Image (cartoon, rainbow, N blue to C red; front, side, top):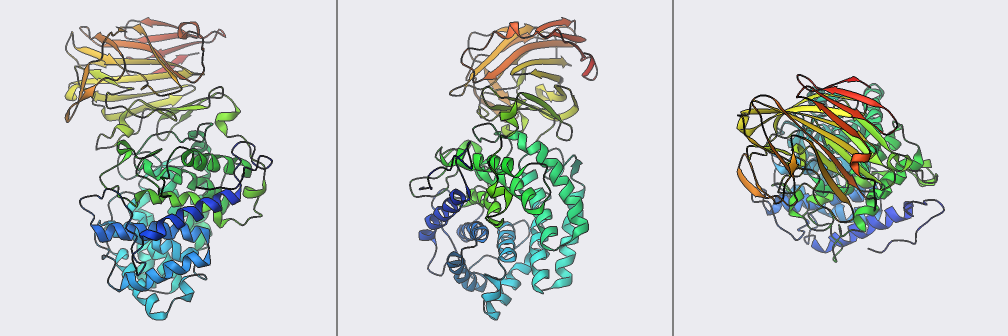
Length: 582
């Protein structure tokens, strides 16, 4: 991908300006064009296909997701190509929109693109094409979505159809139904779960905020925009902390192949005027994410987005991931809707949170602790509240970062009796530099109460195991190995260094040998406390962990910490982890 020369005056950190975003969008759109069918209604991109979706559905996905990018780019020549596809697609080429089917997802992208480019695309179509397209989209108004962010796809379709004067009452009903549905998943402080339970991840920004805020903004629904905008602004204060100094988002949650779609809520705040971030910081974070992926193989030699994280990587894929799935990354180009003279494009870049200094921030709604260090630009997410019922490793580990990925050998886990399962996660609170949770282990026979206390790059990890038979083996692991960083795990109480990797099993059986040495111990006759120091750092020669914090353990009841500046903290773990003093 050929981009303009860097602009260090305007963007001293990334070198990216609006011209770089335009060039990237143009290159991505040009690369997919050879894969369009003759009628341009389908884009059959190369790559493995989900077994359940079907070739037509995958082709529609390619059309819809790249149409969304074309809508943000607003290039009339490109939009004319997609107009050809609209003449053919709804006339029998595209699969019907049915209950919980992939075409429902793609209908939302088509509808949003048409709403954003109405004067450039929709208004120039023949009446017959508009009618066929509206009729095809209308099935989304009554199709049953999965109970998650999918509830917002009928909202998006209904918003467009109502604005265009088609099936107005039915469309408005679909909008109201979907927006009412997501209210039950709002957890406060700008955070939604992606459906029932505690599934917190990037869907919060690129779906749960994106669709309602855009709908309210486009419909000039000031009452709703006030509510949704305040939530978005609150979320962005947290979302901005999820990016490392190199632009990498924390690698947590599902659908990570959408990559720089993580920039979508940043642009959304600037577009609608609901953001706590200065314009220069918004662009710095968004450009950092785009640059991070473009420089690390996200686009292959053909100019196509690959199924993966950097390059192709099956470990970040889900069963629904198809060859066109990565093009939800198009959402990351939302900022191109802002005019070239908007401050978000003209203000000099400002540093993001990770570049401004060390920080340990508790997020109450997801029950996360974010730990960032300026010296190496790393962000670590300590997960004490997010869980997915599919036992996805990108949800259930104790920690994630901007430089590591979950390993099959259970990094950041507590293995009780050979079972590394972490289910039934119960958040127990966050505070000043700490977070805690409880989960079920050992096939439901034991409970693990976990506490993380962080300062700088130092982590104190304490795990209280109850309900396990005396002598049950316990293994505690830290960060997975990763190039360019140093991962450390030091025993403090109840643990000793392990000389060789061991097997760890999950609910579905053995999952492979450990990739790195962990710490081992065994339970006593009652509740047993295991404590370790951990660190993930990019510093070449950090001070020994033992010099940065002193830890004393009072049986299984309390953990006492003393930091080099003289600060003392005391945490109780016997019932509910709590900072007793400090």
